[in-house]
Length: 303
Ligand code: NDP
Image (cartoon, rainbow, N blue to C red; front, side, top):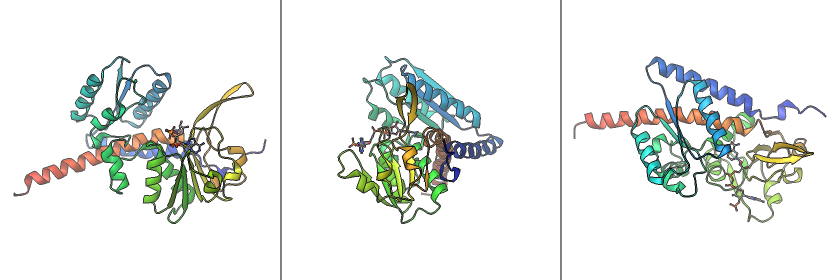
C-alpha cells in the first residue's frame, strides 16, 4: 500500500497534543497564582460507551493539571436528584466546568438538565444562552467538537474568509454550531441534511466540507471538489473482512487523491474534541473571573 502523503493529512492527534500542551502551560500559570481549575463530570447510569468517554475526559483533565470531580450516579437517579447535584456544582467555586455525559436515561429530560447548568460553567456549550450567544457572534462557550474542527481548519487552510463551506448534518451538537462558527469566520455556509436534494452537487461546491452524519463512507470522491479541505467528524464502527474498525462519513481512500487535505478517522477530530473540553474549562474560568470582576466593579461604583 502507498504511504499517505503527510501534507494532505490533517493530524488531529498531533494538534490535540499541542492544544493540551497550551492548556497545561496556562494551568501551571494559574496554579502559581493559587488557582486550580476544576471540571465536574457527571455520568448517570452504566452505558458502556459513556463510561469510556468519561474515563478519558477525567484522565485528560488530570494530565493537564485540571482538578476533575467525577460524579457517577445510578441509572435510577431521579431528575430532581440530578437537578439538585447540578445546583450544588453551580454554587461550588472550585468547579469551573460542568459536563453532563449524554445520553441520559429516558426518564430524565435532557433539555431540562442542560438548561439547569450555569451558562458560565457550560463547557459543552449546549445551554440556550450559549447557543444564542454563538448565533449572535458573542464571546461565549461553544461546543467542543465544532470548535476543535475550526482549529483544524485554520491550521489547514489559513484564512477562511470567503471560502464556501458545506456542512453535512444539522445536529445541535455538531452541524448547527459548526455552521455558526464558519459563518463567524466569514465563510459562505451551506448546511445540508437528510432531506436536501442532490447532495453530491451541493457538496461539490465546497472549498471546505465538514461531514457530521454518522453514515459510514457516505461521501465518495465524486461528491468532492478537487482541492477541497475535508473535516470528517463521523465515527462509525463497521465490520470488514471479519474485523471491527472505525471509519468516517467520507470514503477516505477514495477521497485522498482528490482533496487538498483531510482528517483521518480515527486520529482526526476525535482526539481534538477532548482537548477542546480542557480548553473550554479554562475559557469558562476566564469568563467567571470576568463576571466576578464586573460584579465587584458594579458594587464599588456610586449609584
Ligand atoms: P445526529 O444523528 O444527531 O445528526 C446527524 C445529521 O446527519 C442529521 O442532521 C441528519 O439529517 C443528517 N443525515 C443523516 N443521514 C443523512 C444523509 N443520508 N444525507 C445527509 N444528511 C444526513 O449525529 P451527530 O451530529 O451527533 O453526529 C454525527 C457523527 O459525528 C456521528 O458519527 C457521531 O458519532 C460523530 N461525532 C463525533 C464526534 C467526535 O468527537 N469526533 C463528536 C460528536 C459526534 P436530519 O436532521 O435531516 O435527520
